[in-house]
Image 1 (cartoon, rainbow, N blue to C red):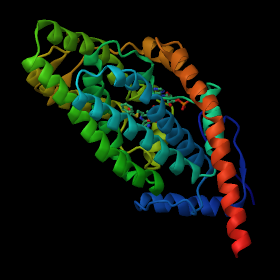
Image 2: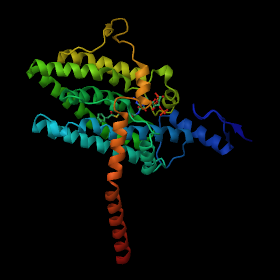
Image 3: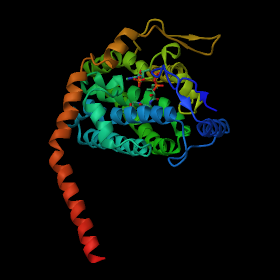
Image 4: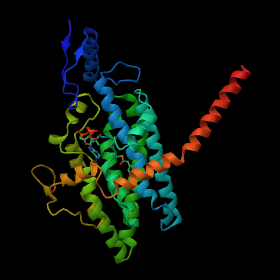
Length: 334
Ligand code: FAQ
């Protein structure tokens, strides 16, 4: 007997026919998820679970790699040796995060070349936030404070993602992101407490430009998020986009007060009844425009990644030739 399966996703309108074995395997999988089990790479999993993870983890990896560009822009212009060393280490950490995440995605059967092809051809997404320019040194502090702050808020729950290789990668990523957030905040504190009027206004200007894009990082409102319901059901995402955004606002407002800057939202106010901050409407048209490829730096970011890939071809070829030579040597010695 064959059963009609439920739709496998928003994009797969046509129902697929499943064998009785698949139905039984899927029921066992769902029972494991309900019991809070973690899924390993060798375990059976529904195709849509696999695809959802490859999509999310590879987009996350791309975000880390593309995210190196706005900050890399300031390495040669950092104001002191100390700030330069911190920024260098941070950008290098982001590269490392990309590599752990590509490795986690590869355990699902998609090769790194396939993922990078999707990035370079513009098929794959990466976080909207990295399509905004870093126009002053204060942007670097604000990226650490707000962008890494939003990233941690989103990523701590991913340490409990039901797919174990992703969850394990996220533990290390979160430890490093938390250092990143603190160094950003500390550099802003120094500018606000010891800086002159021009430096303070540079911080305020950076906050004005980065606040709303940071709130957009959490993704569309829950009602407009096609993937959330299934991802929450499967324990891939543990907390919804809107809940995480609210937690971020609630955590960030007191930090802004301590810094002595104003967040650019006239509707931002404490709601005593709900025990959280109310905040103004997000410009979702801007968000979708940037996600769709028409943000301030989309073309520049993609071109930089494609160029880096092309320029690195000789390194990959040399590494492969070396690996081949080592294998031949080992075979001859055996
Ligand atoms: N930008 O149904 P949902 C970092 C897309 S790492 C672009 O809600 P989902 C570290 C989404 O992909 C920052 N696209 O989707 C760092 C989907 O399109 P698709 C990255 C976005 O997956 C700091 C569609 O909209 N973090 O910052 C965005 O359930 C400093 C519908 O959305 C991660 O990737 C967006 N902001 O939830 C590095 C964390 N939001 O794929 C350097 C892992 C949504 O169906 C310097 N990812 N979309 O065509 C996640 O938690 C989730 O994937 C969400 C989106 C929450 C991002």
